[in-house]
Image 1 (spheres, rainbow, N blue to C red):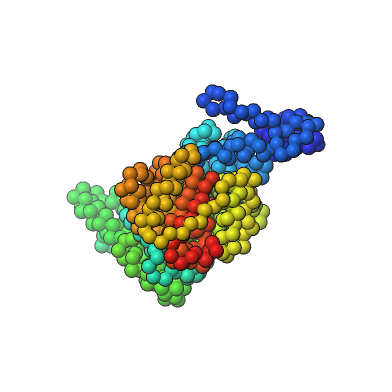
Image 2 (cartoon, rainbow, N blue to C red; image 1 turned 90 degrees about the vertical axis):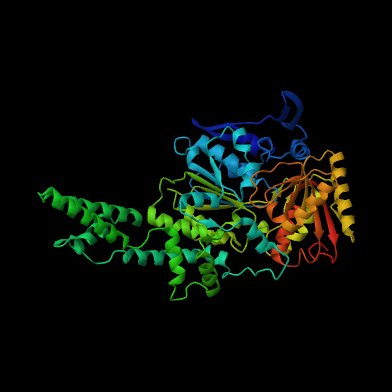
Length: 593
């Protein structure tokens, strides 16, 4: 019945909704919004009255809610769900929904509401404990942690792909520190890497690499068992053809590691049967000891079924040079030290899956947030853990700041899902920021080279975006302090100072503390967002939102005229709900002229 409330925008035509008893039809005479806080009725708005004028009333309640100040958690949007959001929430479960949403379009909250809807609508087919949300980092998980409990949903696992992969692999794998990755890709020193198909992340995240890997796994499995007999002791031999029959015929439906275990157990049973024919206990004990030692030796000669061991070997044995030499050389270098990069986790989990099977990792529905920074390989991999492609994949290509390992065009997923298995949705309306902030960010959008249309703002006007220059370092510090004090006086509860790099933010944070301003510094690997005044590198601000935002040290060196820098600047600007200031230093930034 609530679908009427969310989708109705006016008019006197008959309406209907689907109920367990069938289609219910009728007329709408009034649509009313009520705001209750701490058991107090604060506001009543009739956004539609049949036969009335209804001019501009429908957005009045929405604007009232959007104008509220922010705390340190993502807010639930149940009172402001719009028609295009509602259609996504109520879409059938058996498809992969790919959602391109502008900054501030409510992508994440729509996905969380969709989980609540699926659990209600398909309660006989889906369970909360078999749903999973993949978020970009652990701090973002903390930020969204309040929404599902408010919707009465529990037991949905919320994690990052890296944490899930490392837990599943269960091997002694050391993942490269994410802060080091940030310094590598977002430092100002040296030339920034070009985003090409042969960069390690793009190559290892491609479906072409997965296909090549599948071929290597097929060859590995075919040549896994050597054609030789097992001699338990002198004169007692199990023929090689019998061993091969067990391994390749009887156990062919099991994954490789389990086939290996079954084979060892089968040979051991054969050995026990041979021992039962020996009457002398002393001789039987000697033969048993010899047989078991030889069985261990026989099994140890078989190749490894550890994912990391196989993964290392394919880079060393690539005689056809299918892997680009720079990728192969770099990979061999750090893999020898037992270190893996983020882009290696997808291939490693896939190898582990091929060797061991799903191991009780089966999902009824998967949400992938900030999916523009996830590789096609990872999406294809997750598909294997599901009976049908029930996905909610959401992101914004204009915020694809990890394009060196992520998705540049949503069409890259067309090889993962058939046309019947997927549907594409666009959320172009932005509800987060004021009209002035969104229009300013829209001027940066063409420089991202994504071809995306401009975000459409809700008509919520505020103060103009402030662009101010400074020359002396002390002047920037005083401007930042004045920005914080001024916005606190205006009632802003969350204020962000956004820098280009982590070292710069550490310095800004120290200066604020010396000035007597209490602030929280966000760094890579952080697990909690505390609200208040926050200092954060621009690449870690994605997904968060603040009442007021100041971008520090904006200039040509930090944000040059290329798509990656444009995406970063776009991300920084679209974090602001009510006020946005850019402090420009040195050479003017070409992205905001």
